[in-house]
Length: 355
Image (cartoon, rainbow, N blue to C red):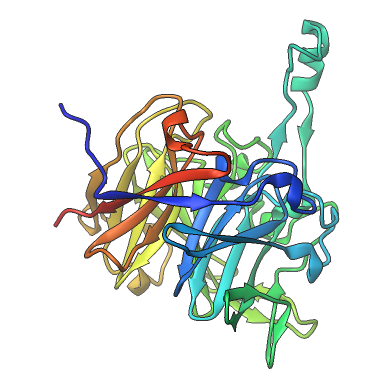
């Protein structure tokens, strides 16, 4: 079968990491999510504590990095990674979430002998910056939208951050479906957020893991601002502060989410660390679902399968692209060399959704 081809490609141009404070990795090679607000395209690298804005310049460039630690008191400091895995623009608000996941130590053969490697692999690490979930005002400037701590009466708000714990994880600890996954590292089928959308004060979080009997999990929260100025989910499912939607995904985890009219587009991919298939699904009328339940199969349709390229070009970001009818922009992690035409540049694909 001939490989599917994108409708067109666009070039994204970034500053060199040495020119950006608190950035130690090449942003364009490690994109984890994306969203668009007008002519501002926001992307994030999961190795930083910030978001990055591109604007049209023939391709997309004029790169500006915004360090969230400039106006958020992050428990690991402004230089600690947030593992941002979800971005979404709702009007002039930018919703942001970290993965809320654990990570296992790595065996590095160049640094460890085999016995030391075994000890490293026994270490489970918790980065408190990863527990961020909040929304940030976007201020309209002549050069594009900028995330700020406040803009008039609008202020950045988030779920209260703790040095040694996560409030969201605490609310999930006794959950019969998700509780067992909370002590398991990401990419080993543990709890791992990798997509989000926000509309008003409703937020949907897509989980890469766990996957339950071929169903991926989307958590829905309805936020309020408490007396201390923090976001806090309301109790919306009995005593629980969230709804669970189990979406039939044929065993794939969620990599990103995007609202399309009344529907939710779901970018899927492997749950574990290995390579595998990636698809775009459509959950019809998702905002009308107001109870925890399994989503009926007839409510979820398969839109398209993304080309599989093995160890490279893993689809990670999904953005509606209004310049094309039924167009979406897909951005990739682990880019192939052919996707890197020049230093600090990467090619992203515009796909036209069938139907």
